[in-house]
Image (cartoon, rainbow, N blue to C red):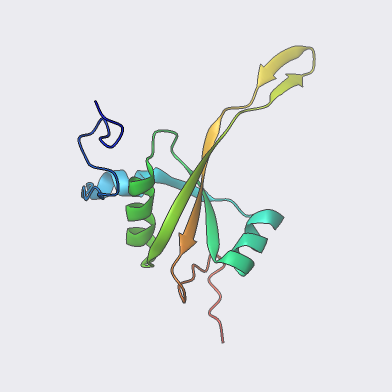
Length: 119
């Protein structure tokens, strides 16, 4: 198999246009990540951060955000966050691992989580 072909059979640079069922789209995005870092990204680079399902792919995340929030997505970056090992009293334990998606929106697009309209 040559390097220019991917396992899925698509040539490099050729986009996959798979339309997912609506039920799957509503399950992919779990919640927005609201932190100091994500707020700074939203202001500076018009990026929004979401916690997504661990088996979600970039094209699924793109379609879900466009469907749920009626915005246009420029690109998506995905990070797998490993769960920390913690102690609960004397017993050792671990937090669950999760997936974070950085969604960059097209110019002029915005998602308002607080429900406040910009005046």
